Image (cartoon, one colour):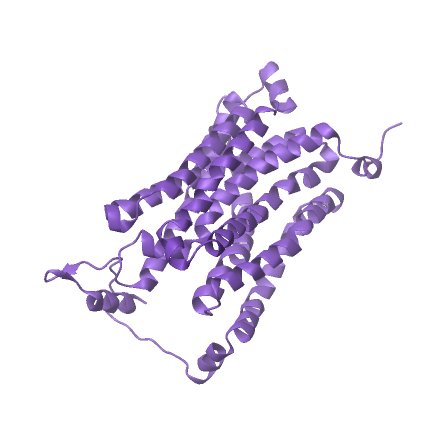
Length: 384
């Protein structure tokens, strides 16, 4: 007798399936940990790797460097997706994790602006691009690998474990930075202590590589390879044929962009908003962000399980609608409770800015033999 969907969805996860989930998820966790450490240290990096003269612009440049990693993620997904279709998922996994680990350790060893000048931000951007490139391949590759190992009726639940890794990676990065700060005084952390969370990833990288050596190639890939059904030109077939391209565009501008906004707003912008706009102490922000991350962690698995029962579409649509409806009220509430003086000032002293002949210089340049802070500030505020 055929087993019903309800009966299959309630069966226990086998030991082999559990090993696959742990090995895939731990590697993804490490990738996100490496990627998010920079976010937790963006304020510190603005003083270490960018020219002095204006703290606000240096911080904005630090954030732009963080964002650069996201820009190349699609390229990484295309490159490593193509590689995975040619040589298999397992070896592609190894390539992305090693590339990410090398780039992260490189950031931890990078000399500051005081030591090598403008080469420091250039190298930092290059390493961030490598991280984003590797992360693009890791995210899609891990999802494909787990999906190809998952029973059709439990695919949402199995792959939801990968969604937890982004949250756990951010939580681990916050913990590593907080422990490093607590272990030394502020001067020592600014001098060399910030490097410790990056260098710790060497140990995590070794564990992840070991776990991934235990993985076998996915049965779907093996079957397609044996029957000679592998695509000869997966990128061309995906983007060169309208029947496929339209689904790529729909997913890009609906699901992918929606998830990006949800993660970016909830995980990053809220942290920067509390620290830099509302002037909440970094340790306090990290504590409350950690509590929030722990609280939401189980819901990734819950909604992954639910997607196997009712479908993915309505869950994703509901998430995007909730974000659109709650973002403004939540940030108003953060302002009200975290910095009521700022809220009162905004209400009673509105600021109106009029500008003309706007020009922008990212970093101040030497003027008459010296670095002109006034010239730089005027240019910046004209731009704003």
